[in-house]
Length: 330
Image 1 (cartoon, one colour):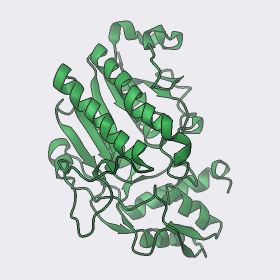
Image 2 (cartoon, rainbow, N blue to C red):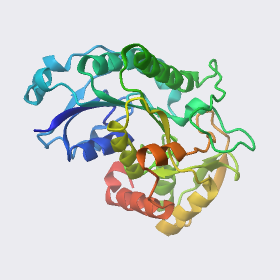
Image 3 (tube, rainbow, N blue to C red):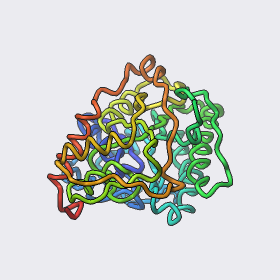
């Protein structure tokens, strides 16, 4: 008999890929309010009897046992084996629109999730972000999980950056008080199929622009560097974290290879046979260079490292985009 798993924020980019993977082993309950997630990401899953989607905002209290559409999963008897939390608006270009709901997700929503973890004694993975380390510092090396970073808690983007830090504090505090699972995945830049178009995700924007021979826009200059990890590698890590030791704490999940964004754009133009040009735009406050991860802990504790080469991941993403042109208006 399959165990029940809840994925909060499961209709988002990474969350939908995780739902798809977990369906091979579990009953999957996907909770999302579609603020930045999309029905299109999970449409192919809804016919599976082991999958159920619930539209809900986690900052509002909820009781899964009272939802008739979940009765077949017998949550009142079987509980929730695991809970994975992605739920937080993520939109670099439409950041202003989601400021208050971002605060709510990282505070009220996080507490609601932890109360559910406590109630069902669930295994728990909180999906956080590399923004907790602050921006990239000059001549800085790879960041370890114990790096405190510098985050301006009053900046225009503090609701996200400081919000992510506070959400982690809630997870850690519940562990200290109630011995709930203390497992935090700090994701560095992830790319792959189902990224939102023209929302500051860069890679999908590059691909669509390249297929139309339009300019590829970099917000910054030719020195912009980043790490890039393919979504399937991230899902591998998250799946391993479910059954990792309960007090593993934060784990960096990303590529520890620094890439020039210009070289990534050039690879995409080559893959698409594009005549596009690379142009530089004024730097945006929410699209910035982020720290490079040290992934030693993930290797040692999870037996994980990113396996998909950038060239292969880009090709998979290009192929998906071209096969789903109607989603991108190509």
